[in-house]
Image 1 (tube, rainbow, N blue to C red):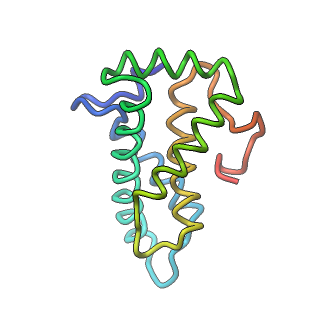
Image 2: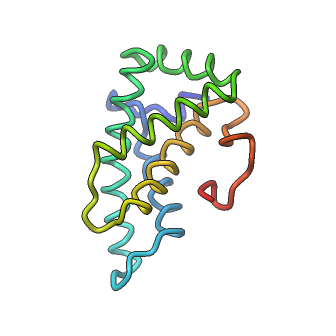
Length: 140
């Protein structure tokens, strides 16, 4: 399953997955007085920035190769509480390292959570749902 997630350019998160994340976020998060096309451009840049930070955290947590990361994610996915704990601490760390001037802190956190959850969902056999509970659009 991880091969559809990995990018061809050595990145851990593919452009296709990044674009999909930005599109879902654009459907859910609204920035007043900005049109949908401009929002898509903004959210694409935001998702790229968050994905780059997420890739750093994945490498820091699980190893520096795609196969190391894939193996470790699959291993911790067997323990929902451990995986949820890693996800929560990663959301917190990334939110502390990113400042998106056009978004407030709550919107930043929603976007970071959505990116991490979507990455985990695409990476884990059987998918990922935080706390085992389905959410609207995977966000709420």
